[in-house]
Image 1 (cartoon, rainbow, N blue to C red):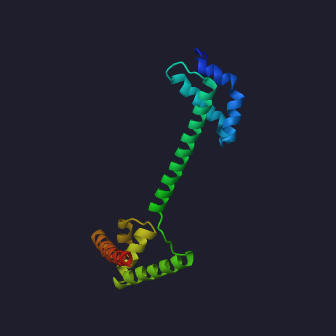
Image 2: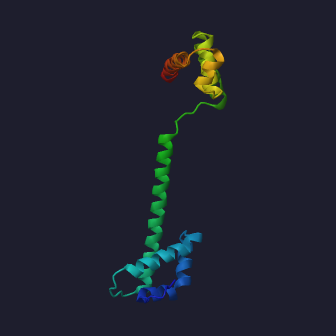
Image 3: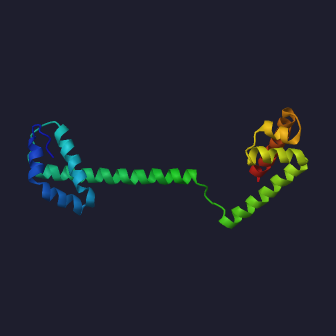
Length: 171
């Protein structure tokens, strides 16, 4: 635990009582983290003002217990924050998997219907561009239409799908 610098009186007591302090911490729930808690105690003692202490062993055991209490409180607080975050970010009631699949199929049918109502070309242009990843210029060349016509067909499809999404969100 020493790093070459002068060791304070309390640090000498920690070195002398190390085994007892580790057992004490383990008995209070530190488990594998007893060494870490002891190291925290070492650091606190190193930075604490050097005032005379009547019973340094009792003082260190009390300080070790306080460190354990602080760690426990931090752990509980962290768990509470994580639970609050989870509760705020996850919907309270999530539809069962089969219900979500049914809703998704219904929405897909509605999308297909909305695209079909626009006529064959806007639906085809939308699928080629958005699903197949074909560029607008290539689509225009394939269909023998202007690039402007492809853009207008995409705008029609986007408008229809935006209206449909608004309806989905309202439900």
